[in-house]
Length: 392
Image (cartoon, rainbow, N blue to C red; front, side, top):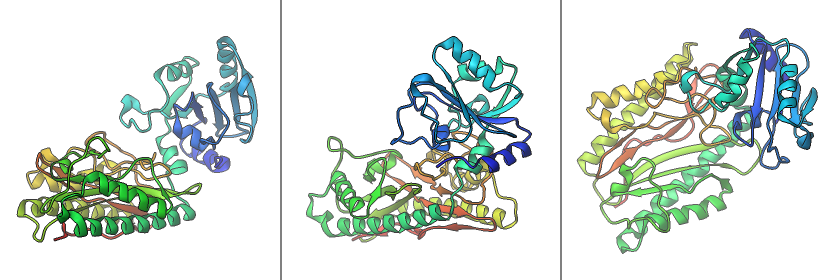
């Protein structure tokens, strides 16, 4: 992937910016690396590099002399530096004529997922008399929007995840009463199915039974897991993408009960989470259809209001959803008015999760779906869980 320079320059002019300065040191800015087409297979970039996309004219880069080929695949001239004094002088030359630049920076770190440039580097740019503003809107448009191939890859990955979910529930239904099934055993089986489905991921799936499900980020391991017994709640959270360049993730969560009749307190908590999910989906659809897509915090608030009205506000302890991309937690807008206040709008072509949850000491429930927004509507890309699945 290389940046679409003409489209970026048009957007820069629309935003009244002189340029977008991409900067990275040793992988500190994954957004800049992806935009510059630097991935894990690329030659080493262990020194600071800069790539300026101006609102008008040819892009230009600045690289260390021992890594002079690091940006050679990008358009524009490149200057080199070696020592720190030469770096300072060359950077000033690189930025000559610019007064207002976008970088991966968020004022007061309001959106930490975007804050990828360290304070010292920002200070150095400002010392040159240049105003630094957030690149958040640019990142949304040029890093978080899917093309048709990415959407196809997401839908394909989603279908494979649902198949793995069904197989996991079948395993639970068939073997849990034998007394030897554990969270780790189910997770290990799912890992094998991921390989069969040719899905890649950054972590094994979550399999959380009984009190484990009350921990939103519980993950069983070979050293730490519990048995799964009859008449227990089991939450599974699984995410993955196709093993090909440019593929984007799907990410789902479902809840089952290893008995014939789901207890009322489990069913009631899940119903609240489901209604919160549906309220968030409805907001996204209504606003997208009206031509005024919502901001991330508004989607979170739509779900959170339902949970708070049901008296469970203190038990919903994470944001409502996150951006999806080539990383499972993408660089686009998050559905968040809790951990952060994400004011970015949902752009056409973006995908994200909606996943409200309610967590107690004894158990927890969560329902997670994926939503894709196009220019005129929004759609959920997989089945919706309406109630806890009874496996008895």
